[in-house]
Length: 290
Image (cartoon, rainbow, N blue to C red; front, side, top):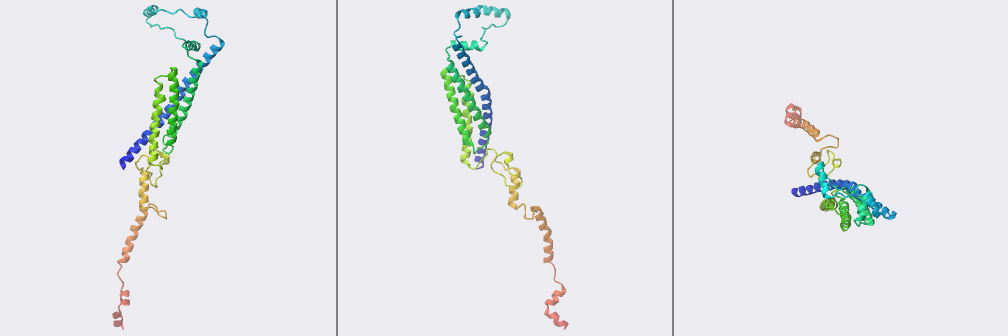
């Protein structure tokens, strides 16, 4: 029995830690990676649509020939790197317009980028909500159904986003870490709390908070770390022995009063009868006196 309680307690602690840690990490990821991807996709979609509407794309061949610098050959780059000691690399696009031109040259549709940006913003909102729920309710066994459903819904959203990214060729392996692995671990932790809730329907907390522990003089709560607290042990001992009497005196004071009263009782029991009492009770003595 005790071994089963220890296993349940260990599972509750692990599930609580995973939910708390991953919930915070999910909110951080939403405000950094997901927000950056969503705003980036929407920004380039606007630039590309604006270039197409204004007719600045495709640029004229004469403008490209006059503005674009001559590309250096591989031999020239190797000679320059030998002379300067610095490896020369072809110049990458610096402005957003140049990046948008490269995207349009690659056959990417601005509408596809806009769809990706909207999905990333939905992903960010879902990660914020689910991360907040898991972090706040990490210690609540009675609310484990909410965390379980939230983690399952997040897995569905992440699966849709990854599918669209894969179809458009924009999926990266790094996105699997925070889009699939983290929600799966959250779902597993919430499932552990669900199992504890089914085993003990009256259980509220995975680990009993300090402000919820019973004060001194009251029976200890078995829920929590599994070990009885000092205040709980004192309370159980006091309750077993009748710690406080109706007059407000403690058990020790009552015991001392009882010990003080015992000698008087013994003296009264051992008191010898007096001569007057013997004469009054002896009829022969009365006859002699007459």
